[in-house]
Length: 468
Image (cartoon, rainbow, N blue to C red; front, side, top):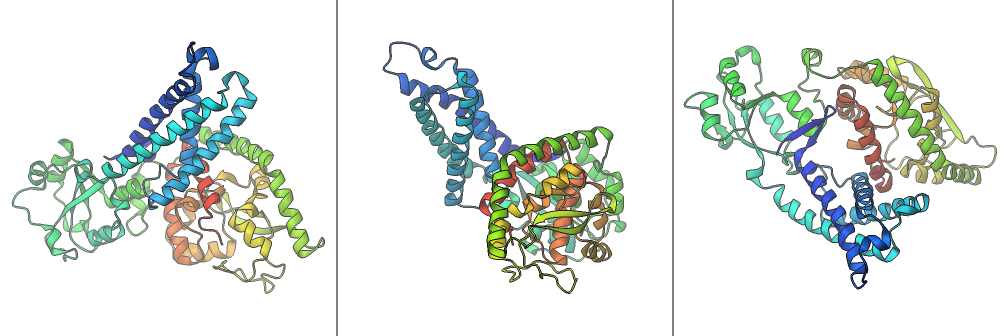
């Protein structure tokens, strides 16, 4: 199975099917659970709890969102059965809390506690079954797209090494690599295909779904007419950059060219998108502020208890925002007051001895980021976007990494696609890796993608991914 673009974001079809099937099963679990609770009664289930359908729809939506927040619909999740089970328990716990709030606010939708227990147990059993079947089916070779790589040189070998994991190839299978005249072969000779006829003839005979063009030097010439024949006969032809964008959710700097960025779709910034993003930022910030103010108060008290009442609570630091404009980002202070006494900007590192005891905890839980809500309300940041970096680092990285300044075409954010997909960066190499995800966001940003990022950030916070 391939992917489908949902508001420009690539989503794997297998996980859309999984979510759709589970949504139907969750709705069915409301019916089954309610029946089990009242099966000995002489009256219908609706006479006890009211109409089933609205309750079933709300239950399915809340549970799907809870599971998405736990990362259970991420195609590149590498956790085993134990990790999935922990996330399932967390998703059902979150669903129970949300459903309790809904029942409190809207008593007409109430499910009796006994009925809800049967519903939850039934839904959990359904999930265990669907996940077990899905894990067996999703990696079946006959369900994957067959990809023929045109090229067998260093670029093709780089594609092979970058997509070496099983989870990286969840939706496709490399059938082989076609040699190009004059190109030095770098892939495993056993995977090289010697064509007797044209690329189209081979693709037609071997049920090829897609041809990936990965030649080292296109100036040597491509069989354009042959590739066009593939395209016109329903066999997709892709370049390396677009292929990686679709499969990995990032734009590979090793392959991207200014020409590709100019002619590719995306990188659009209209007034409607600006207005919708600003509205989203304001609503999300107010909701987070209403829910997080007790946590922020506890953080303030903890910092005072550790460092004294005269110690600064919030720490300001210059960062680079939209169109390169500098602003002061606000964070709860997590390091010693003299962390940068010489005035030089220093990358945070693993087990940094400058971090206080309270600071270590609030960093791990991302509590130190909460004052940035004020930056969002002030318009310096968005709720979702690339991580804002310090001017010193931006100057260095702009000189060393191509297209680095493109990340400043959108507002920086508290949460982001790069923060979600890559751990905390503390070096030029890390910055380059994160830029690839930032460019994907800049190219494909939308309200739906913002919501998806915000939802999946819950998993990052709960499991402490990438914190330092």
